[in-house]
Length: 445
Ligand code: DOR
Ligand code: ZN
Ligand code: ZN
Image 1: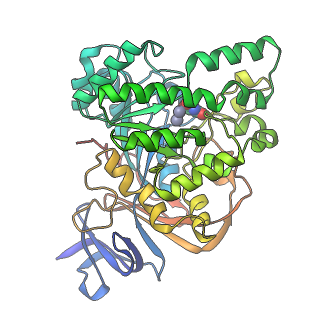
Image 2 (image 1 turned 45 degrees about the vertical axis):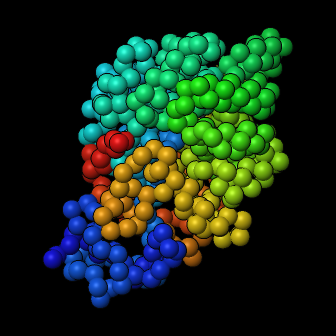
């Protein structure tokens, strides 16, 4: 047998830990994991000289934008950023223009994405306005639902418990997870109105409008609904440490999971003072206590996964004078893995926990078949990392259109140098080698 590709002399991250060996890949699948003498010959052989080979990383929280928001990011630039960051599968958020909130809109978006994506992409849909659209949405290939309780992307009354319960029950019927941005809309809007009326327009005022209490209150409301709807529920970007205990409790009897982000683990509101609009994201950067308690919960596995919440905006938008004119969000695909690997190397995060949170756990939560492990029969999505090379975060080198980062200037290790998607090399030594359209649309089971 002549395989398509062999990667040899690697340190493989497998379910049983790190082991020396290589992989052979054929027709998009991993066909053999073994030491070199036992690998079949292949058209191309890459020698990793002892560097580490991981299952392709999965980022379940990415805003790829495109369409009318292509000036911020499009499917080409966003998936190039994913490939350069070592992510072989990303799940795209629905708050686009137009929003993904019906089976028709989803099909249109998939058509646009097909010819452009360079890594695998799955799609979220907002709750549809038409309550009969749930089955058609899930059969059109949507991976999960998303509800932003502060800023919904469809016209549903998120403050009405009955409406929300009905929507969550409809989600349960089609057996897809719902990902939640938990923030109490009324509380945030009232606080914001008060701050605006008082003439407060500075970056830190954003934090005053988006306090932890808004997240905690919204989380409690959703957990109450989940008890009745019994749908799988995933809390996005947990930023307040006070959310950890109720989530831990709910996990005992409900299908609840959660995510945090590199910035909520590593940055505090001081960064808002230093970087202004460029460090504004929602939920906002909070306190050192939130950082350390979220890190503890992440290490214990109470926080299941890491999502980058890659949310690109233009530099002009991020540089506006008045905080209420600045859209929240910053890019994350190209910093997430090195930021976390650097915390592995300083002894904070165990390697297996980091790997699980970026590979097998998101695959499990979002039912991504054939993904998340370096095993025979799995999809040939792979990421190679050089743990010796140190580099300095330089946003001008990013592939995303959003060329800024609160992590600018940080000295990190763990930059990926090789990304393989479906058996094809899409990124190698700083170059994108993929053709647009080479990535696959990911459909959940
Ligand atoms: O900071 C954020 N950016 N939070 C959100 O909820 C939306 C996101 C975006 O789309 O830019
Ligand atoms: Zn969000
Ligand atoms: Zn987001």
